[in-house]
Length: 67
Image 1 (cartoon, rainbow, N blue to C red):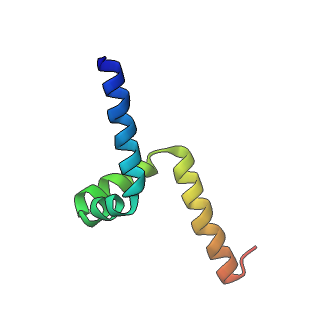
Image 2 (image 1 turned 120 degrees about the vertical axis):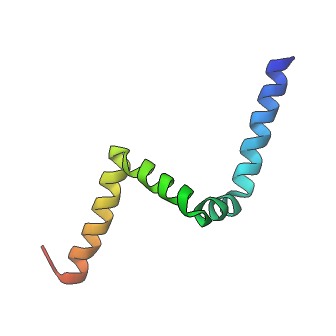
């Protein structure tokens, strides 16, 4: 019985998290401390850091005509 209730609770949390995802992100990003933790945490992940650096520097190369 506890397992069924736990699955329903997790499903409900995922549903409402997805439904109100933009409100949740605005709430999290409006707090400077949480924003700093989120950015530093995401940049500590290698694939996220590589993707960010690639997008930043590839657009700089396009803007300045660097090959």
